[in-house]
Image 1 (tube, rainbow, N blue to C red):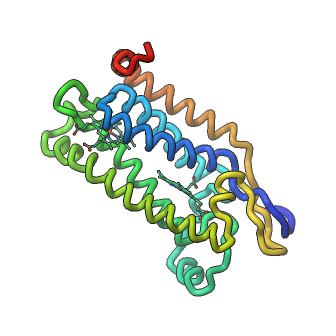
Image 2 (cartoon, rainbow, N blue to C red):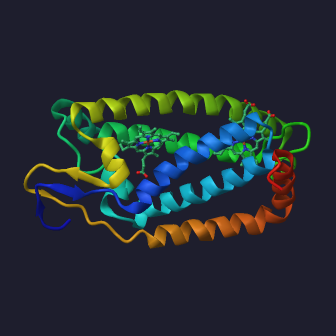
Length: 230
Ligand code: HEM
Ligand code: HEM
């Protein structure tokens, strides 16, 4: 933590904001590509999201103050204090932190279940034939059910964010431009350069492409031909 602040202060780094809004776009693309049965594109989007998420988890250990899990994941006492006082938080508030953890968990489960799923026509996740039948069938059911659960939690998450924004907390604006008005004398969080986050995401993406790229790119090309882009 640095100086004393009272005006519009940077609280969220580029990594957190980029991860958040790219995740929203990618989840939309994942849903749409599954609806259209473009499973090559579906997998490519999933590997991109997994790289951003994996890098965000590491950033949660080594990143800026407000990106770190130990900064925003509340203990029981902090949660009770927040519920009793509703003191504005510098970064994520303790209640939305719980929702954030649930959303991250569901997105991760969606990714891992996808790896074990098949459409029973052309596409098999790379772990499908490696795991026992009961596990791939469980993963297949979860892949559909888990997404609906995710949509339900996202609806709550957005509703809460809109309510906070409307009441003047301006959390959506903060998630967009990164700045918040903090009460006078509140120490500003230390924000790091997000280049390392992007580098981590790129390394993870290259790793995933090294693992699955040769199987994936022909499927992506077929999808692009089906769509008429190529
Ligand atoms: C697919 C949909 C969404 C998912 C999975 C999602 C997930 C998340 C996650 C994981 C975070 C924590 C970000 C981090 O620390 O890296 C977050 C924060 C946040 N999200 Fe979303 N989000 C979604 C859509 C939205 C939308 C549409 C809005 C606004 C209209 C929104 C508003 C916010 C706000 C305001 C925060 C910060 C909350 C706080 O500071 O307490 N989210 N979201
Ligand atoms: C976070 C990442 C992912 C999301 C949000 C996601 C989302 C979805 C959704 C919404 C469906 C349609 C479910 C239904 O109504 O049947 C679907 C189907 C499918 N997904 Fe994913 N998926 C993800 C990752 C993956 C991955 C990594 C793979 C494989 C490598 C994969 C392979 C498939 C397959 C094969 C289907 C068709 C399943 C069927 O026909 O029953 N998905 N996915």
